[in-house]
Image 1 (cartoon, helix red, strand yellow):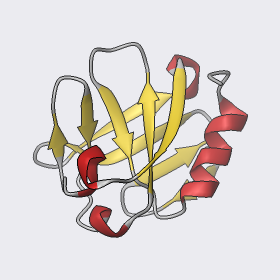
Image 2 (image 1 turned 180 degrees about the horizontal axis):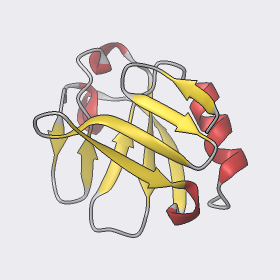
Image 3 (image 1 turned 180 degrees about the vertical axis):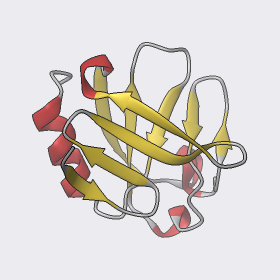
Length: 106
């Protein structure tokens, strides 16, 4: 397995993206690229998760990221479930590029 990108919370390898600190208290979520239906990027606003450190609602779930209030963009991953994971990687452009290359969700 080749690591394409890694930070404290997000790992992209050849086959999947892994979101650390997704589940309480310390569980990770691994999403194979083939299961991703759509990904979107949006600006980070106070209303769109900028104040959220961890958690969410039935529509969106944010992994633990104490640095989120200082980030400018987020990525929403739709894998067909009710709740969509929302990630805020340290290197947003690199993760966005990997997701574009590895999925047919655009």
